[in-house]
Image (cartoon, rainbow, N blue to C red; front, side, top):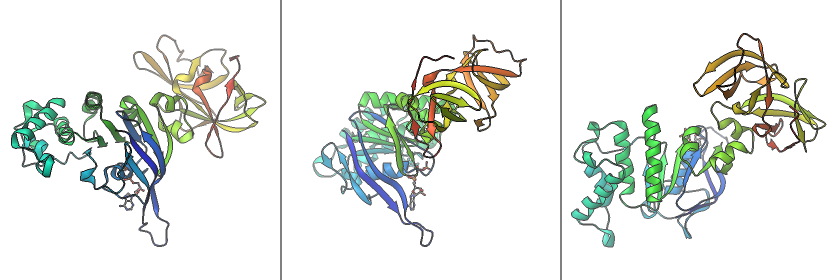
Length: 370
Ligand code: ATP
């Protein structure tokens, strides 16, 4: 089931006197293709939960509409939308067993949808099998680990065979190892059920690793939507570039003069199609190649061995932020006794941004002389 948002807007009254409304979601227009997993991603307060609550019907939009397939569901009550929802707090009933928790949404079905006890038990077992908790059906939530409780919550969301599955920060209460395991599990379940799934997180790595598409948001405004790798490689603006990637992108004050990009006095890359101007230069950690003849000269601070890769920490007079972190192949030896390290740059890992608007400035590279 595809989900289409048209001009979707949600304003909340501001609690401060005479202050303008808070625009939590500002004219969203996008389509979530059938059967895909979408990661809604952005910092706290950017409007992720509001978007999810609008889609499931817990909130009414101030403007705009929501379609499930061709059907306009904007004014449909949540229980008639056919969405399954999983929250950060698993919200399981503590006095009920796992089986009873999963069955719970089926008990209120009325009319033609009403199920017999046997049918409900069968559906609950199917959902439990999907998330691999069928052995735990007679336990109470307190007798389960956090990861197992989250699986019960997912089974409960799946038991009514929803058209759309919504997950609001479903992994935040789990420890690091379990987060990793559970996110893979969510991906497996999503692929198996082929359910259109919307997954909210503020963790870019989490969103990048399991999503077919990511939607990056800031202050209620959609910044960019695309496949994770495409958004990483081709961010629309400085915010998106900074938000994606660990370690984060390295930033420098730079300028373009007559087709040459300078960081300080150093001509670091030939760039075509850019007017002469001051720019913010972003270089991904994997964009630095140690080279004694390289044009970018940095002060070497530290070399951290991480097994397959080496992380080189350095500084530069024109950097923005605390330090430069470059990731290089462990086979490349860096002389830690030296006080400087020189790099040449991989052109496709260098991004330019307007210092005024923070928008991306496209350029083409001539043959890299560096
Ligand atoms: P988080 O990651 O912290 O959960 P979020 O991205 O999910 O954040 P939302 O909860 O959607 O963000 O909130 C978006 C904005 O709307 C915030 O500025 C928030 O303060 C505001 N907001 C949310 N709910 C209300 C409300 N009921 N009344 C007033 N403002 C609200």
